[in-house]
Amino acid sequence: MQVTEAQDVLWVFGAPGVGKTQTLMRAATESGALYFDCAEIEQHNRAQLLDALDPDQVVIFDRIEHWLGNRESESDLFSWWKRHRAGHCLIAQISPRMDGLFVLPDLASRAHASLVLSIDPLTDAELERLLACHIDQRGLDLAPEVYRFLSPRIPRNPAKVMALIDAMDQESLRDQRRITVPWLKRLLVSLS
Image 1 (cartoon, rainbow, N blue to C red):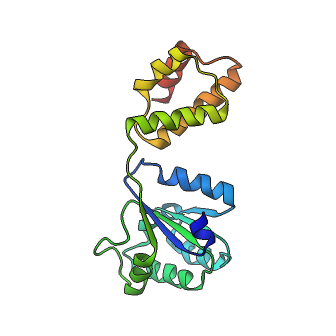
Image 2: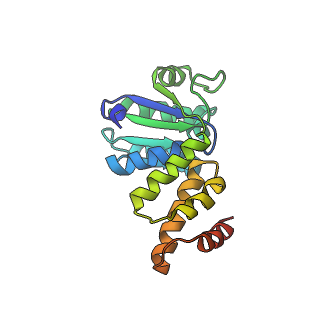
């Protein structure tokens, strides 16, 4: 969020499931940035949305590639980008420097000038650290045998790890009990 507070533009890209959206959603929540999923905004609503946005509000546009490759949508985006004064983040599966991505050269040059961050998939060890970190943050009490059971069954992308942690947190609060291996087995079956 330091990037956007400095009125810069950050383009984050990576394969599906590497944690782009999860990371920036958390940053948006903590900083008060607005978050929009471009794939969920219908074409006839896009121009109205962009016109209505406060030019000084930090904005995160996820799946921005859904607005690219079309002259009208790129024109709307370029017009907004020119008048937007605050920083913003763009999330995509592809780099802005990929050939043939843009129709409008002016929009392409702005995107090329943004700070570009590639997010690579997490290793198994990093996924375990992610799990452990969020379990600690939520105050979930897992016995060593539960960790041993869960370790080889950790989902292989951050979004699914977070969904598992959310489910563990909600289910354990609802049931008012410690998380045990049999209980976790049932939860994993219900999530699959």
